[in-house]
Figure 1 (tube, rainbow, N blue to C red):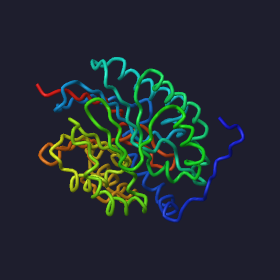
Figure 2 (figure 1 turned 180 degrees about the vertical axis):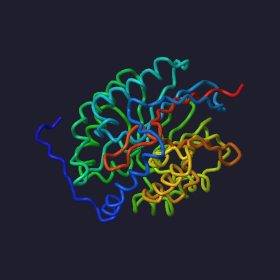
Figure 3 (figure 1 turned 90 degrees about the horizontal axis):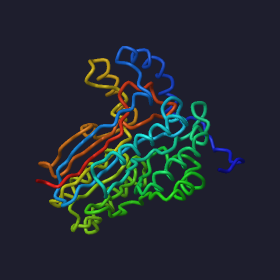
Figure 4 (figure 1 turned 120 degrees about the vertical axis):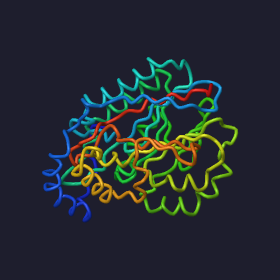
Length: 321
């Protein structure tokens, strides 16, 4: 690690100033919506999906690491998160074809006065954890989230060092072949340039889909990409859609009117335009697509106190009997 590196910390943006003004009142109401959840409450969700493949595959999916956030992804929390990931791999009934997929926001976007470069304090731990996964023979593939791309030091400092651990960060519509399936990365649609990319370039990517694959996995940060996938990539191949970003609002919207109302308000603040896809499990197009929008494993220091369970998703893709 570069001991002399000093993170770039811009000032808070005007839209976030309004959120900061409203935050104390929302936090007061949130106390009546459910308990606080931190890293000690993280759960590993087990999911079995039937596929058209001939051999079983294991996908360990986690999103929104936000490394450096106290109580969620500080040094001890990161060790716990990756210990759970390794446990999933070691205790799997799938001897081969194991992959770890990261759904973006590996680091925090700094801005004063809420974050002065928190991800730097735990960056060595993050790198060591990723390197350890790779050294154990796990394939690790990621996409970038808005906090990564909008971090002023992402491209010159964080990203190059993360790549040195041996993991793969997918470029737009890059395909990573994994056993009988293929992982296709989509860029973060919350970025203006990538909004244009989704509208103008994604329709022409249809010919690049590896149609020989028995299963497709689309990995992307923001669930607002889902309508584009449904529109352009209904190819008769079973597909898994993995996203994060929403934190499933940060509230358990099944716990009453206050939680539901604050959760819906949080989605407007993100913002996410296609809120129907902010759903932990969703079958789409008569089962051709199965979507998982993750609550994520951590939050940014500016976020509201978390009122829903952080999760890692241990997905077993099994041949149809």
